[in-house]
Length: 168
Image (spheres, helix red, strand yellow):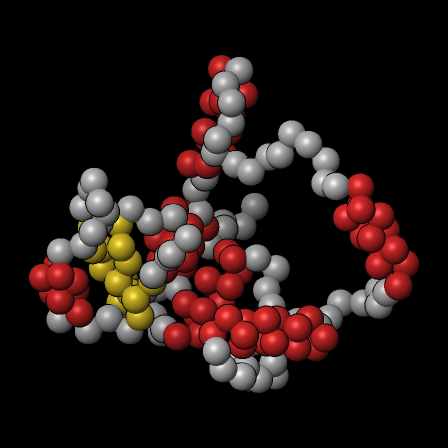
């Protein structure tokens, strides 16, 4: 069998998935993943059944269905207090992981540096390495999880191409 790309080493077993297996093995409540123990409201299920019959039943264009991007632009525009162009300022992805990979690849080149606050979501490290970028870590100091401005300044002295900020 042909050897897989060396880049696959960056994608390891997820800590979240490991915690799920441990919770199952121990009979514990699983707080690692969002697995609701209830069904969605009946009204939502009924409406989903209706729209499933309406179509279209095709893949959308790469950046997302135009009507969905228009609705998002309108909603986000209200939130941001400005008009957004759904054709140039809105992209729909299949999830946040794809969105982050797409963004990193769009903004960086191999060898570029990315500032990342630590602790970080485990995918960010792998995604930076997958793009052949070098992470520069800025620790968030407990208990308030604030960064030292001098450490951040030192990180920027290394001339990063991007800074990854995750704000729930």
